[in-house]
Length: 456
Image 1 (cartoon, helix red, strand yellow):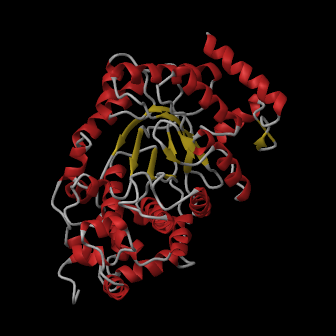
Image 2: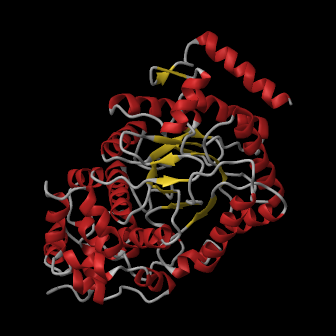
């Protein structure tokens, strides 16, 4: 490693410019130092990374417990630079990369991401499709799903359902209809979950629902009789950071088991798979919790994916610009982080989506969102957010809209999830694989149906 004292320093200084790493005091001090770190990292054997844990905690133990020595064997003798060449080679396809997934620890994915260009990250990620199943099937090639995010600042059920209904006009909601509650209480979460299930049941919509409260609140709502399709939790890459979220690995394991048992007992749904968890992550979360232990935020994000994949999730997405400019300062950093996160998650076997977003005090705008949205669509991202008019009035940040979903599907010749598309066409919302409900007369008719539902 030469001038770098240990792997932590080497990893941090090889990272692309991130305001979070600068805030933590671990970033390269010059471009010359950054290039030197990248060169040293490229020459580092993967076996050395495996043999040198960057941190000792329960996340590290989980990562090593799930490590597959046999899957690692084909690349064991490679350096980080050689792994990059292998990932990008024309002779390396999806079959080889899928076989490799359990043989990579997150730190290896982080290391190779650091020496890849944005184009490299898109090209390698586009080779991989990680398919998951709950009430429908997501992640197949040629498919772009959307999470409808009908948040309401007062948790008004009518407002939530109207926003969710509008999303259907644009073909949104096949990933999940997922609501962030303004109030994290058992009563509010239960009301939202019951309303979403009533909505999905009334229209027989082949999709999942979720209320993105704390895992403890959701399980308490389950105990009180609320129906749960997907169990949500934000996760991070260190034990201490997860503790700051009020969660432990044992809670995640127990929660998953309880939801699977809940699904077995429900007779109102025909389940097509057992992927029942929904995780959100984001570069900078461990640093904001003062739980980064001197590790850079890209590496910590990869470790969060090591947590996520242990629980076979249906959905995982980075909320890439949500934490703020203290961690990702401007468009350049947000775009880079979004491509890194998507690539690392896909390489580790996760069904990666992305909340392409920014806060109003970041050096970014809606064109920034468009740029990352198109790059990630080219990279084969599983799903994006569908927020009414792209402005989340509850969380107060800018994301992607229902209209953006239509645009990406048109530009890249993508479609909603197959079962959901069949349903859209059967309802008349889609015709010839395109949204049909955008003309005024049909839109008024459909909104009348929505108001009738809400009046019941």
